[in-house]
Image (cartoon, rainbow, N blue to C red; front, side):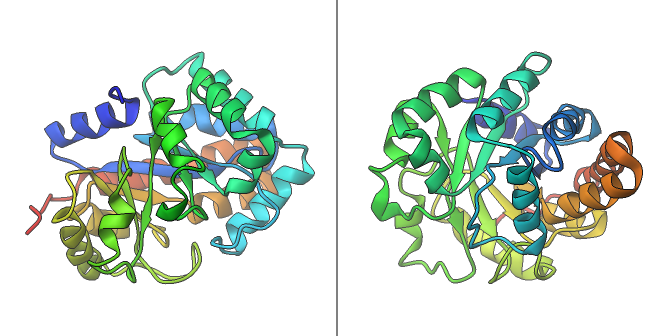
Length: 278
């Protein structure tokens, strides 16, 4: 497949000698207009890659914050059609920032795989993270996505041993998402030392960038992880902030609170001293 925005962004950041800041928010949370405004503001705040959640009724890998965000989005009328429309609106002003749709297979299956891939590519989506499709099911979505020119990003976890890792990495593109803890999203803080060792182990099996997520909530945590990884993913902390500030301050307050947090974490990522992988 040809080079994607994700490939170009990680290559540029490698030349700069720093890690990427990858931000996650739920499409349609707390409503379409606010989630679009946040997405548009994220790059200026310091986000290098944007992950948009695809709301789903049974998000088994997600913690309470992201589960609740999905429910709010669905109650507000968010659909796959609206999520792709959100990407199209974002692309009117930003043709450079990579966008990854993250979620579960069911909404894509219901939409129709072939139709989804055509519409996602046309909207400006660059990659997919579908957490409930293992490598054994690559023909279901992964291979068609790659053929359509979309990166298919796979998760590796602390329990993904060296025997399983090659299967996980096979057909993976864009970057590898390393889940820094065992459990659901937002449930614990990552240990930078253990994360660094895990990233180094993964890198012995692949040349792809490795981004680390689950549990990152502060600039200090991001700085520690960015020292040994190619990217730092922040999700639950942003979703929590969005919800809390929208409830008390409305749309403008929510956008400002999320972008302020992203700016602070981006400073942490950018101040990290990169440690070469072993």
